[in-house]
Image (cartoon, rainbow, N blue to C red):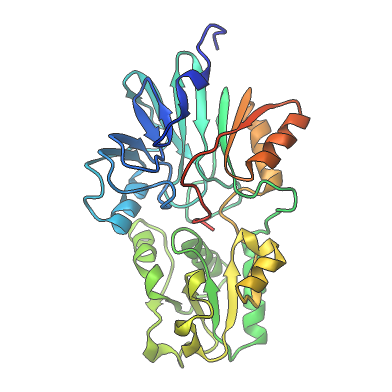
Length: 339
Protein backbone atom coordinates (compact mmCIF):
# COMPACT_ATOMS: atom_id res chain seq x y z
CA UNK A 1 0.00 0.00 0.00
CA UNK A 2 1.22 3.48 -0.88
CA UNK A 3 3.47 5.32 1.57
CA UNK A 4 1.80 8.62 0.59
CA UNK A 5 -1.61 7.51 1.79
CA UNK A 6 -2.96 9.60 4.69
CA UNK A 7 -2.72 7.87 8.08
CA UNK A 8 -5.83 5.96 9.04
CA UNK A 9 -6.38 8.03 12.18
CA UNK A 10 -6.81 11.12 10.00
CA UNK A 11 -10.04 9.72 8.54
CA UNK A 12 -11.19 7.05 11.05
CA UNK A 13 -11.35 8.23 14.64
CA UNK A 14 -13.46 8.39 17.83
CA UNK A 15 -16.08 11.12 18.00
CA UNK A 16 -18.81 12.10 20.44
CA UNK A 17 -21.14 9.53 18.85
CA UNK A 18 -18.57 6.75 18.41
CA UNK A 19 -16.06 5.55 15.83
CA UNK A 20 -16.46 7.79 12.77
CA UNK A 21 -15.31 7.33 9.18
CA UNK A 22 -15.09 10.89 7.86
CA UNK A 23 -14.86 10.32 4.08
CA UNK A 24 -17.70 7.78 4.21
CA UNK A 25 -19.71 9.87 6.69
CA UNK A 26 -20.77 6.86 8.74
CA UNK A 27 -20.23 5.47 12.23
CA UNK A 28 -19.40 1.96 13.38
CA UNK A 29 -21.48 0.82 16.40
CA UNK A 30 -22.32 4.39 17.51
CA UNK A 31 -23.62 4.78 21.05
CA UNK A 32 -26.22 7.41 20.12
CA UNK A 33 -28.48 8.01 17.13
CA UNK A 34 -26.72 8.99 13.89
CA UNK A 35 -27.74 9.38 10.25
CA UNK A 36 -25.85 6.29 9.08
CA UNK A 37 -24.52 3.41 11.17
CA UNK A 38 -22.68 0.20 10.34
CA UNK A 39 -23.49 -2.33 13.09
CA UNK A 40 -21.23 -5.28 13.92
CA UNK A 41 -23.77 -7.35 15.90
CA UNK A 42 -26.97 -7.24 17.92
CA UNK A 43 -25.80 -6.76 21.52
CA UNK A 44 -27.14 -3.51 22.94
CA UNK A 45 -23.74 -1.93 23.59
CA UNK A 46 -23.16 -2.10 19.81
CA UNK A 47 -26.66 -1.98 18.29
CA UNK A 48 -29.04 0.74 19.37
CA UNK A 49 -32.36 2.06 18.10
CA UNK A 50 -32.94 5.40 16.43
CA UNK A 51 -30.41 5.56 13.58
CA UNK A 52 -31.43 7.02 10.23
CA UNK A 53 -30.00 4.04 8.32
CA UNK A 54 -28.41 0.80 9.48
CA UNK A 55 -26.09 -1.40 7.40
CA UNK A 56 -25.57 -4.85 8.94
CA UNK A 57 -26.01 -8.53 8.20
CA UNK A 58 -29.55 -9.77 7.71
CA UNK A 59 -29.38 -11.68 10.99
CA UNK A 60 -28.25 -8.63 12.97
CA UNK A 61 -31.09 -6.58 11.49
CA UNK A 62 -33.62 -9.26 12.49
CA UNK A 63 -32.17 -9.32 16.00
CA UNK A 64 -32.49 -5.54 16.25
CA UNK A 65 -36.13 -5.72 15.14
CA UNK A 66 -36.94 -8.31 17.82
CA UNK A 67 -35.19 -6.31 20.52
CA UNK A 68 -36.25 -2.78 19.55
CA UNK A 69 -39.20 -3.09 17.19
CA UNK A 70 -39.71 -3.27 13.44
CA UNK A 71 -39.23 0.51 13.04
CA UNK A 72 -36.14 0.87 15.23
CA UNK A 73 -34.22 2.51 12.35
CA UNK A 74 -35.29 4.75 9.48
CA UNK A 75 -33.98 2.26 6.93
CA UNK A 76 -32.20 -1.10 6.96
CA UNK A 77 -29.53 -2.16 4.48
CA UNK A 78 -28.86 -5.91 4.79
CA UNK A 79 -25.37 -6.76 3.58
CA UNK A 80 -24.07 -10.25 2.78
CA UNK A 81 -20.81 -11.35 4.39
CA UNK A 82 -17.83 -10.80 2.09
CA UNK A 83 -19.67 -8.53 -0.37
CA UNK A 84 -18.12 -5.04 -0.72
CA UNK A 85 -20.22 -1.89 -0.90
CA UNK A 86 -19.12 1.69 -1.60
CA UNK A 87 -20.27 4.36 0.86
CA UNK A 88 -19.33 7.80 -0.50
CA UNK A 89 -16.29 6.26 -2.18
CA UNK A 90 -15.19 4.22 0.86
CA UNK A 91 -15.17 0.46 0.43
CA UNK A 92 -16.96 -1.37 3.25
CA UNK A 93 -17.10 -5.13 3.64
CA UNK A 94 -18.54 -7.29 6.43
CA UNK A 95 -16.59 -10.41 7.39
CA UNK A 96 -17.51 -13.10 9.92
CA UNK A 97 -16.59 -12.38 13.54
CA UNK A 98 -17.65 -15.67 15.16
CA UNK A 99 -19.20 -13.87 18.15
CA UNK A 100 -22.95 -14.56 17.78
CA UNK A 101 -25.38 -15.16 14.94
CA UNK A 102 -24.92 -12.41 12.33
CA UNK A 103 -21.84 -10.89 13.93
CA UNK A 104 -19.34 -9.26 11.59
CA UNK A 105 -16.07 -7.43 11.42
CA UNK A 106 -16.16 -4.19 9.43
CA UNK A 107 -13.42 -3.93 6.78
CA UNK A 108 -12.96 -0.30 5.70
CA UNK A 109 -10.69 0.66 2.76
CA UNK A 110 -9.90 4.18 1.63
CA UNK A 111 -6.94 6.00 0.07
CA UNK A 112 -4.83 2.85 -0.12
CA UNK A 113 -5.26 1.87 3.54
CA UNK A 114 -7.31 -0.87 5.17
CA UNK A 115 -8.72 -0.83 8.70
CA UNK A 116 -10.60 -3.69 10.31
CA UNK A 117 -13.01 -3.08 13.18
CA UNK A 118 -13.35 -6.45 14.89
CA UNK A 119 -16.44 -5.75 16.96
CA UNK A 120 -16.72 -8.59 19.48
CA UNK A 121 -15.24 -11.86 18.25
CA UNK A 122 -14.04 -15.31 19.18
CA UNK A 123 -12.00 -18.04 17.53
CA UNK A 124 -13.63 -21.03 19.26
CA UNK A 125 -16.06 -23.25 17.37
CA UNK A 126 -19.69 -22.15 17.59
CA UNK A 127 -22.35 -24.11 15.67
CA UNK A 128 -24.75 -21.13 15.78
CA UNK A 129 -22.69 -18.64 13.74
CA UNK A 130 -20.10 -18.29 10.99
CA UNK A 131 -16.48 -18.69 12.19
CA UNK A 132 -14.12 -15.72 12.45
CA UNK A 133 -12.11 -15.00 9.31
CA UNK A 134 -8.87 -13.04 9.77
CA UNK A 135 -8.33 -10.13 7.35
CA UNK A 136 -4.88 -8.63 6.84
CA UNK A 137 -4.89 -4.88 7.40
CA UNK A 138 -2.93 -1.74 8.25
CA UNK A 139 -4.93 -1.00 11.41
CA UNK A 140 -6.72 -3.60 13.52
CA UNK A 141 -9.26 -2.28 16.03
CA UNK A 142 -9.73 -5.09 18.52
CA UNK A 143 -11.85 -5.70 21.59
CA UNK A 144 -10.04 -6.55 24.82
CA UNK A 145 -12.75 -8.00 27.07
CA UNK A 146 -10.53 -10.81 28.36
CA UNK A 147 -7.14 -9.24 27.65
CA UNK A 148 -5.27 -10.64 30.64
CA UNK A 149 -3.06 -13.78 30.61
CA UNK A 150 -5.22 -15.43 33.29
CA UNK A 151 -8.09 -15.79 30.84
CA UNK A 152 -7.95 -19.06 28.95
CA UNK A 153 -11.40 -20.28 28.04
CA UNK A 154 -12.46 -23.91 28.01
CA UNK A 155 -14.01 -25.63 25.01
CA UNK A 156 -17.79 -25.38 25.23
CA UNK A 157 -18.03 -29.11 24.54
CA UNK A 158 -15.88 -29.83 27.60
CA UNK A 159 -18.05 -27.65 29.83
CA UNK A 160 -21.21 -29.34 28.54
CA UNK A 161 -19.67 -32.67 29.53
CA UNK A 162 -19.34 -31.25 33.05
CA UNK A 163 -22.99 -30.20 32.94
CA UNK A 164 -24.22 -33.61 31.82
CA UNK A 165 -22.01 -35.27 34.43
CA UNK A 166 -23.58 -33.11 37.11
CA UNK A 167 -27.05 -34.04 35.87
CA UNK A 168 -26.19 -37.73 36.08
CA UNK A 169 -24.88 -37.28 39.62
CA UNK A 170 -27.88 -35.15 40.72
CA UNK A 171 -30.82 -36.69 38.80
CA UNK A 172 -33.50 -35.20 41.07
CA UNK A 173 -32.32 -31.58 40.82
CA UNK A 174 -33.21 -29.14 38.07
CA UNK A 175 -30.17 -27.54 36.44
CA UNK A 176 -30.68 -23.81 35.91
CA UNK A 177 -28.17 -22.47 33.40
CA UNK A 178 -27.62 -18.73 33.53
CA UNK A 179 -26.63 -17.62 30.05
CA UNK A 180 -26.96 -14.29 28.30
CA UNK A 181 -30.19 -14.24 26.28
CA UNK A 182 -28.56 -13.35 22.93
CA UNK A 183 -25.89 -15.72 21.65
CA UNK A 184 -24.74 -17.58 24.74
CA UNK A 185 -28.12 -19.17 25.51
CA UNK A 186 -28.60 -20.45 21.97
CA UNK A 187 -25.00 -21.63 21.65
CA UNK A 188 -25.27 -23.62 24.89
CA UNK A 189 -28.50 -25.25 23.74
CA UNK A 190 -26.94 -26.26 20.41
CA UNK A 191 -23.79 -27.68 22.04
CA UNK A 192 -25.94 -29.58 24.55
CA UNK A 193 -27.88 -31.06 21.61
CA UNK A 194 -24.64 -31.98 19.85
CA UNK A 195 -23.62 -33.88 23.00
CA UNK A 196 -26.67 -36.13 22.56
CA UNK A 197 -29.20 -34.51 24.92
CA UNK A 198 -32.48 -34.68 23.00
CA UNK A 199 -35.14 -34.18 25.69
CA UNK A 200 -36.97 -30.82 26.00
CA UNK A 201 -35.01 -27.81 27.21
CA UNK A 202 -37.06 -25.21 29.04
CA UNK A 203 -36.74 -21.44 28.76
CA UNK A 204 -37.24 -18.51 31.10
CA UNK A 205 -39.58 -15.99 29.48
CA UNK A 206 -36.75 -13.50 28.90
CA UNK A 207 -34.88 -15.83 26.55
CA UNK A 208 -37.80 -17.13 24.48
CA UNK A 209 -38.10 -14.46 21.77
CA UNK A 210 -34.47 -14.50 20.67
CA UNK A 211 -34.24 -18.29 20.89
CA UNK A 212 -37.28 -18.59 18.64
CA UNK A 213 -35.68 -16.07 16.26
CA UNK A 214 -32.55 -18.26 16.03
CA UNK A 215 -34.79 -21.14 15.03
CA UNK A 216 -36.57 -19.04 12.40
CA UNK A 217 -33.15 -18.08 11.02
CA UNK A 218 -32.22 -21.74 10.56
CA UNK A 219 -30.46 -22.73 13.79
CA UNK A 220 -31.88 -26.08 14.93
CA UNK A 221 -32.22 -26.04 18.73
CA UNK A 222 -34.50 -29.04 19.09
CA UNK A 223 -37.50 -29.18 21.43
CA UNK A 224 -37.63 -25.96 23.45
CA UNK A 225 -40.52 -25.03 25.73
CA UNK A 226 -41.47 -22.24 28.16
CA UNK A 227 -40.61 -22.96 31.80
CA UNK A 228 -44.04 -22.19 33.23
CA UNK A 229 -45.05 -22.53 36.88
CA UNK A 230 -47.09 -25.64 36.10
CA UNK A 231 -43.96 -27.31 34.73
CA UNK A 232 -41.84 -26.91 37.87
CA UNK A 233 -42.30 -30.49 39.13
CA UNK A 234 -41.97 -31.92 35.63
CA UNK A 235 -38.66 -30.10 35.23
CA UNK A 236 -36.99 -31.99 38.07
CA UNK A 237 -33.81 -33.46 36.63
CA UNK A 238 -34.03 -31.31 33.50
CA UNK A 239 -32.42 -28.19 32.03
CA UNK A 240 -33.80 -24.67 32.26
CA UNK A 241 -32.08 -21.78 30.47
CA UNK A 242 -32.42 -18.37 32.10
CA UNK A 243 -30.74 -14.96 32.29
CA UNK A 244 -27.92 -14.86 34.87
CA UNK A 245 -29.96 -12.33 36.86
CA UNK A 246 -32.65 -14.98 37.44
CA UNK A 247 -30.31 -17.28 39.34
CA UNK A 248 -31.28 -17.12 43.00
CA UNK A 249 -34.25 -14.76 42.58
CA UNK A 250 -37.90 -15.46 43.37
CA UNK A 251 -38.48 -17.12 39.98
CA UNK A 252 -35.79 -19.74 40.66
CA UNK A 253 -37.33 -20.82 43.98
CA UNK A 254 -40.11 -22.71 42.19
CA UNK A 255 -37.54 -25.39 41.30
CA UNK A 256 -36.89 -26.42 44.91
CA UNK A 257 -33.18 -27.07 45.26
CA UNK A 258 -31.78 -26.46 41.75
CA UNK A 259 -28.17 -26.64 40.64
CA UNK A 260 -27.25 -23.08 39.66
CA UNK A 261 -24.89 -23.03 36.68
CA UNK A 262 -23.53 -19.98 34.88
CA UNK A 263 -21.96 -20.06 31.39
CA UNK A 264 -19.50 -17.19 31.06
CA UNK A 265 -15.84 -16.45 30.52
CA UNK A 266 -15.94 -14.69 33.89
CA UNK A 267 -16.46 -18.06 35.58
CA UNK A 268 -12.67 -18.42 35.31
CA UNK A 269 -12.63 -16.03 38.29
CA UNK A 270 -13.74 -17.92 41.39
CA UNK A 271 -14.83 -14.75 43.13
CA UNK A 272 -17.34 -14.04 40.37
CA UNK A 273 -18.83 -17.53 40.72
CA UNK A 274 -19.20 -17.08 44.49
CA UNK A 275 -20.69 -13.62 43.98
CA UNK A 276 -23.47 -15.08 41.83
CA UNK A 277 -24.06 -18.11 44.07
CA UNK A 278 -22.98 -20.46 41.29
CA UNK A 279 -22.62 -24.14 42.16
CA UNK A 280 -21.54 -25.21 38.66
CA UNK A 281 -19.39 -22.61 36.86
CA UNK A 282 -19.12 -23.22 33.11
CA UNK A 283 -16.21 -21.35 31.52
CA UNK A 284 -17.80 -20.66 28.12
CA UNK A 285 -17.16 -17.32 26.45
CA UNK A 286 -18.22 -15.67 23.20
CA UNK A 287 -15.06 -13.53 23.23
CA UNK A 288 -11.44 -14.37 22.44
CA UNK A 289 -9.27 -15.37 25.38
CA UNK A 290 -5.70 -14.13 25.85
CA UNK A 291 -3.88 -16.66 23.62
CA UNK A 292 -6.48 -16.27 20.84
CA UNK A 293 -6.30 -12.49 21.07
CA UNK A 294 -2.53 -12.36 20.68
CA UNK A 295 -2.57 -14.98 17.90
CA UNK A 296 -5.20 -13.01 15.98
CA UNK A 297 -3.29 -9.74 16.25
CA UNK A 298 -0.16 -11.42 14.89
CA UNK A 299 -2.14 -13.14 12.13
CA UNK A 300 -3.72 -9.99 10.68
CA UNK A 301 -0.28 -8.33 10.48
CA UNK A 302 -1.44 -4.80 11.24
CA UNK A 303 1.11 -2.01 11.62
CA UNK A 304 -1.08 -0.46 14.32
CA UNK A 305 -3.43 -2.01 16.85
CA UNK A 306 -6.15 0.09 18.44
CA UNK A 307 -7.62 -1.48 21.55
CA UNK A 308 -11.06 -0.97 23.00
CA UNK A 309 -13.80 -2.57 25.09
CA UNK A 310 -12.06 -4.09 28.09
CA UNK A 311 -8.54 -4.35 29.46
CA UNK A 312 -7.00 -1.85 27.03
CA UNK A 313 -3.97 -0.85 29.10
CA UNK A 314 -2.79 -4.41 29.76
CA UNK A 315 -2.94 -5.36 26.09
CA UNK A 316 -1.33 -2.12 24.90
CA UNK A 317 1.54 -2.66 27.33
CA UNK A 318 2.06 -6.27 26.25
CA UNK A 319 2.02 -5.40 22.56
CA UNK A 320 4.64 -2.75 23.28
CA UNK A 321 6.94 -5.48 24.62
CA UNK A 322 6.52 -7.22 21.25
CA UNK A 323 7.55 -4.07 19.42
CA UNK A 324 4.03 -3.43 18.15
CA UNK A 325 2.52 0.04 17.84
CA UNK A 326 -0.65 -0.01 19.94
CA UNK A 327 -2.90 2.45 21.72
CA UNK A 328 -6.09 2.45 23.72
CA UNK A 329 -9.11 3.67 21.79
CA UNK A 330 -11.54 4.47 24.58
CA UNK A 331 -15.10 4.34 23.28
CA UNK A 332 -18.16 5.29 25.29
CA UNK A 333 -20.91 2.77 25.94
CA UNK A 334 -19.07 -0.55 25.84
CA UNK A 335 -19.82 -3.10 28.55
CA UNK A 336 -19.99 -6.83 29.26
CA UNK A 337 -23.50 -7.39 27.92
CA UNK A 338 -22.51 -10.34 25.75
CA UNK A 339 -21.11 -12.33 28.69
